[in-house]
Image (cartoon, rainbow, N blue to C red; front, side, top):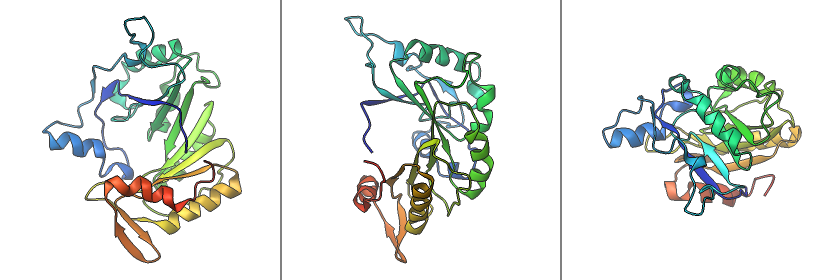
Length: 242
């Protein structure tokens, strides 16, 4: 997968475990390793990051940049309800950026968008996480019908086989990956390949992002170091778009 220049924008940090995919959250691991409580949701120093300017008066985050929003939290976490309108206003002022929101809390979406959202802002893409069959069954039917200009799905970490009933070409891509960390749950290549097959049938681009730390292929379980997980997925050569 090829992306333009990218940055991460974390206007707040901290979250609450919400579903099965959260069990071994990387943010929890990092915070706990330095004695920080990961469940405390707080504004960060980067709250207004996309509006900051350099000495020449130009935006530091350049036009055309892909901005990943809230990667150490969830944009729709309840604790941030009071701050979210300010973030929407900043996004409104930067229509020259592409904003990517990845969320497990898609069921809160309609209660969290601005009044002028309409059929969706063209610069905002939303990715719904569906880590297993249960979460696909709960989240996808809601996500499919929401007014969003650009819709993606991610099965990361992929925790089991998923039958994506109703998957359609309105989804711009499915990103699949295993779980990282020393306690990572198993990801099976057969599950990955079956999701690829379903995407081909539905006309949805498929991207195998990373293997995770415990990966099973042809009946053998591999322990894959973090530095090699993306590379090994790329070597599989199964993305349907480059």
